Image 1 (cartoon, rainbow, N blue to C red):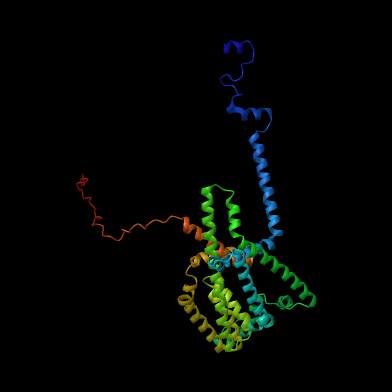
Image 2: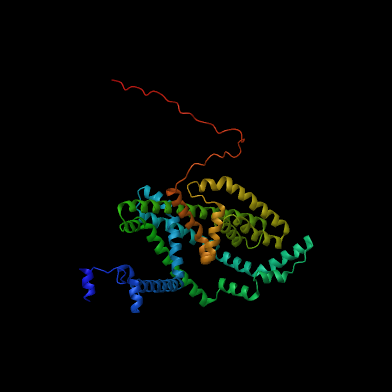
Length: 407
């Protein structure tokens, strides 16, 4: 009947397709091509690509314009998790979390205010003097190297390669010691940024459980347990790591300042802070970079003092590695030096100095989560060193008659 209907010129019924007809579902695209129309999936693909490009452009524009605010927000989070060990210690003693966070922040603020009152003016003056004296220090070191090792280095070329031009030095000194209007503007801007930083840090620390619950409410029960575990591990391990690094930096700065002050090295206060921060927050090479600048300044002033500075840095590094650091970093996540150095390089390449500062805590959080949920396997014994003629040992199974159950 279908063939007769087709021979009579009548249209076939719906759902019945003659063999070889191009109106079959598999040949729908060919039908669109013959009619000069695009298939629906092509239009959707074009719209998705355009939407992805537009989203990328909007995200890049927002990141460039909000970069300073996002950096401040991230530093607030970093500061909040660095207070986590002390906050949890106070909450275990019966103090509420908000009060514990406020007590920690007040204690830190009093310490900072006391340091500024005692050493603020001296620190700024010595820092400005150090920046101004850097070209002379480099020239003195180059001249001493030429006299001692018979080298042919040019002091001007070395200074130019380090970009220590007079215009740059003058600009840095003006930034460090601004005028009256600059002081007022800088103070107001610093107060606003400090209040914003402290406000975000307080709420991130005091409302951390509520924030975790808010995120967990969006997921089922099984995922909620995973989120809670990952959150606690990342907060505890990363906070302990940041807290331990800060404590080690303070101790290193303190002992370095005492040694430089006793030796009579100029600009001892900013040099001590430089040594403490660089040696603790830049892995592997930070120790050498931290002690190199005080040694160079001491070499320009008195060559014998430079030797004592290097000896102190070497001895203190060994004491810190074997006596001080194991006691402080016992409960923190341990990172391989190559991983830590690579994270700092990547963070500095992507986000500058701020990226270099926060790269290690971020990688520490990721590593702690991987260590918790990762799976480890036993190492297979290496049999390549055995003689070729000696077959591997054969373990025979001993068949035993099963014991009868007692009646």
